[in-house]
Amino acid sequence: MKGIMIQGTASDVGKSFIATAFCAIFHKLGYKVAPFKSQNMSNNSYVTLDGREIGRAQGIQAEATGTAASVYMNLILLKPKSDCTSEIVLLGKSYETLGGQAYREKFYLKGLEAIQLSLEKLSEQYDFLVMEGAGSPVEINLKDRELVNMKVAELADVPVILVADIDRGGVSASIIGTLELFSEEERSRVKGIIINKFRGDLSLFQPGVQWLEERTGIKVLGVVPYVSGHMIEGEDSLSLTERFANQNRREIDIAVVKLPYISNYTDVELFLFEEDVSIRLVSGPDEFGEPDALLIPGTRSTIHDLQQLKNSGLAQKIKPYNETGGTIIGICGGYQMLSRYLYDKAGSDTGVKGRYAEGFSILPVGTTFYHEKKRCGTKGLFIRNQVFPSFSWKGMKFI
Image (cartoon, rainbow, N blue to C red; front, side, top):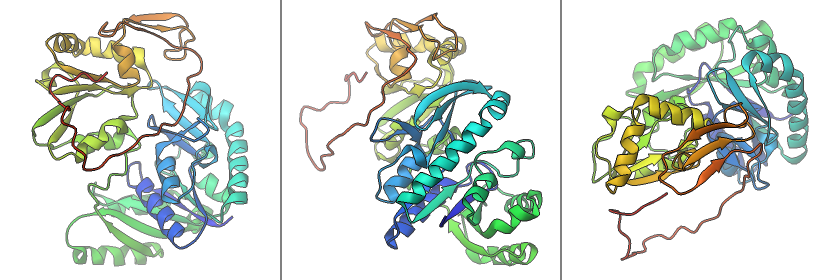
């Protein structure tokens, strides 16, 4: 199979960003190219044209290649529901909720089978694959039954490019340490290194590049500058705090509730690029302030996160805010919290059939959780440079 695989020295080093760039580059060179990530862990999902779910990064990468996203581009999506369990979305549909040990013991062979199927399907349709790993490829306690890094590179028989993040510090140690923990066969697959998120004078790092090449015998293919404001949506919560940090107060102040199992927070990221809007994360009552609008985003564990809001005291701020004319926007799980009650009929939200919780009673509706949810794409019309005289921010209710 023709392709390359992007692996990283850790999570959030920029693998998805680099893979997206390669997807666009090969597409512009005339290749029929597809992204591929066998296993993704994220509560930010992307709905394909046939109404199935994959990781958001692979959906964006498919857009960069000018092709429609499919479940074969990200066949396993793990959506954390607690510190110990994740919902397994297999080939776009909910499969089972398992803990980490059960996932390794019960799902490994099933996962390998699905990976091989997906690689076969994509190889029939595309000339080239840009593959992406996850986290670090050398977590010793996980290597024997991993489904996303070197095992997949071996199955596809593709070379690996190792990406490291210089912005977080310790870049040389992270590269050397990763290479040292590879087996000899695994290390032989690594054909290049990319240093990502570089700031400052590149000439000061040239001795570091030379040392790395001499020490490892592997070419440093490039040093990529830190790119801010690229508008590529974040994939996991590691990038969440960084993206919303250090914003100065602007004309419109939007508070976003930081839920423990927040999902699809990309729904609110576009506000980061509005010059008159500041957007901030709120975790407790002391951070609430007097926002112009409050956003309660989606979550993969609605009832759990609702209880956490009550325990933290933040819930006691929300209802009075609404009663005094505050603007509240509830999205997905956030919308469900605004209802009178939440009833987990199938146990799909909490794992306990029949569990009941009281909502904020801001909306005259109730929420019932069934086994399957409906997924579909949406269409919209973007109108540029149009004036709508009737538009008013203050006093508007978005729910």
